[in-house]
Image (cartoon, rainbow, N blue to C red; front, side, top):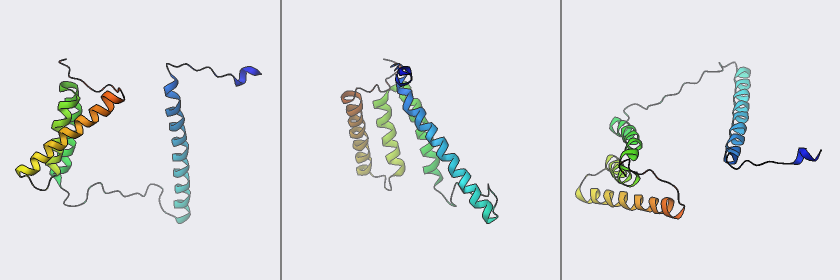
Length: 140
């Protein structure tokens, strides 16, 4: 009977316990939402999957939308090639330029300073203080 209350912890896989519990809870709660929503729609006489979702509003800014997607994918790929710091500086700068209303010398300088300070700050906090491994260049 004492064996039922004994817990053996395998430290090499113990970090996987909490995510599995959270995923299980989310699946149960998501299922409950779907069931209750389906029952409410059935009572109203509406179709269960009668959901109409518009992904894009009319006249959306195509340059900002597609530019963001291209920059995000490029950033992920660039981190493996050149490392975290150079890829982050360039990507944050380009994001700032993409979303900045004016493109004069002052705003470009401010965008560059923001990208350098933010990148070095994030690198210092995570890479130095928390000792989190950040992507490094494949050439190093």
